Amino acid sequence: MKVRREVLGDAHVDRAEAAKSDFDHPFQTLITEGAWGTLWADETISRRDRSLLTLALLAATGNFEEIPMHIRASSNTGATPDEIMQAFMHVAVYAGVPKANHAIKLAKETFKELGVET
Image (cartoon, one colour):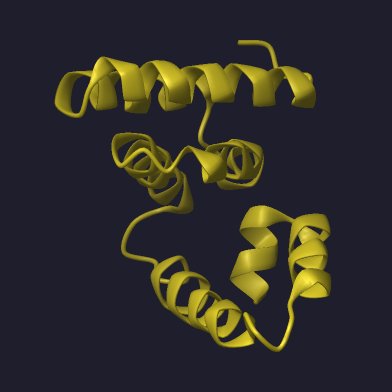
């Protein structure tokens, strides 16, 4: 939970925890322990690199709904807008231009909401 809060921020985690129900409790435990307690807590690669990998994988697999959340988290991981654009350019070449185009659109909207110039 500590790593999850450091990456996503307290406000996001507090909202997710408040929305947790008996039904999705096992899933929330799985992602908290697996994604945040194991994967993101590992120090083999930096959080910046994990952030870029995550954004590229989300875009490449068409899982766009989490891109804004991870764009917001980039302010905590150190991934810059220019680096994120490079990750999405890799997506364009290796996974498809439409996926990268949509990810870039989401990133631009999210950066604008955050007041980050791109």
